[in-house]
Image 1 (cartoon, rainbow, N blue to C red):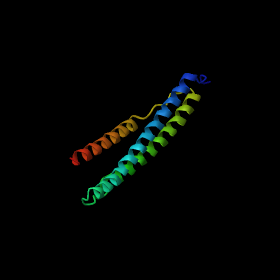
Image 2: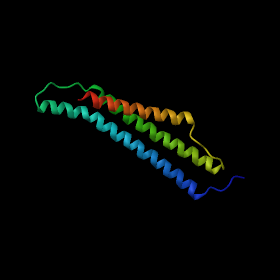
Image 3: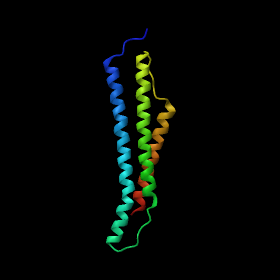
Image 4: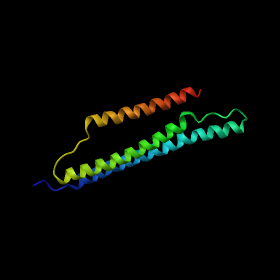
Length: 122
C-alpha cells in the first residue's frame, strides 16, 4: 500500500505547475511584443517618411514564441497530472533527461535569434 500523499509534496507540485504557467504566459507575451514590433517599425517609418520595412522575421518569430508558450502550458499540465498520479501511487516521477535538454536547447535557440535580430538592427 502506497504512503499517503503529504501536503508538502502536493503543494510543491502545484508550485511547479504555476511556474510552468508563468513561463508560458511570459513566452506568449514576449511573442506578442516581438510580433507587434514589426507593426511599430512600419508605423514609425511612415511617420519619418522613410520606406516601409518588410514585416521580416518579427511576425513569424513572435507567432512561434506564442505557440511555444502554448506548448509550455500543455507540458506543465501534463507534468502536473503525471506527478500527481505518481504521488498518489507512492512513486517519484521525474522529467526525462532528453526533455530537459531539448527544452534548454530550444530556449538557447530563441536567445540566439533575439541576439542576432538585435545585432542586425544596428
